[in-house]
Image (cartoon, rainbow, N blue to C red; front, side, top):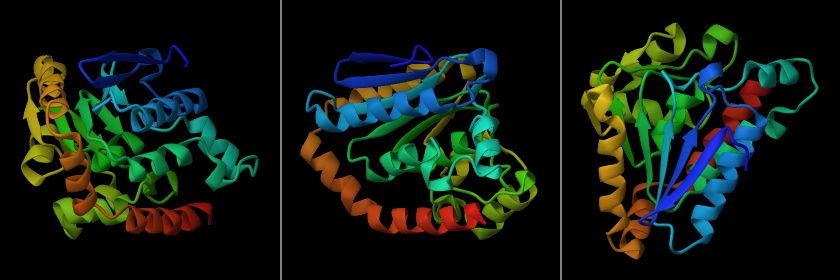
Length: 231
């Protein structure tokens, strides 16, 4: 696993830490592969009860490394073969609780991935942006379904079409995040949630998540988004 994603397992919680602060934690191919490896491990090992995402530096993540988009635009990589695709499918298929600790900026997939997390602790001054339209692209990660379901069509369209940010406090009040706290408390609060979830009956948690989410519907939207993204 690349050093750009650090992995730690403690108390049934597998923590994946984005560690590319000098590049604002932009997600490149190696990082996506490491994250998917960690998510696959979490699904396979019964001792892992919860998966926690966090990041070093001032950015949770600035989103997909723009080099990947360039390769798609130049025809070097098919959209379905992009490094993000296995990660998005892993999010849709995850059966164990996903927790995120978000500070600073979360851009693009940094925001849309949160819609797949079961608990999101966000800094009060954090900024969530989905600037796909600004890049002449369309949203991904089934966010065209999941974001309006969380915050309503009008707010979601404003975020997508105008690329305007949502602050951490609003994210908590509208349901994108579970709780907004001062930036200095984000990691501790997220770890607290993760630790509590790790003590709950695993089978009941899994079934509850299955009842609340429909992976097949989510993947179907991802396919439609992928086709539009390709165009």
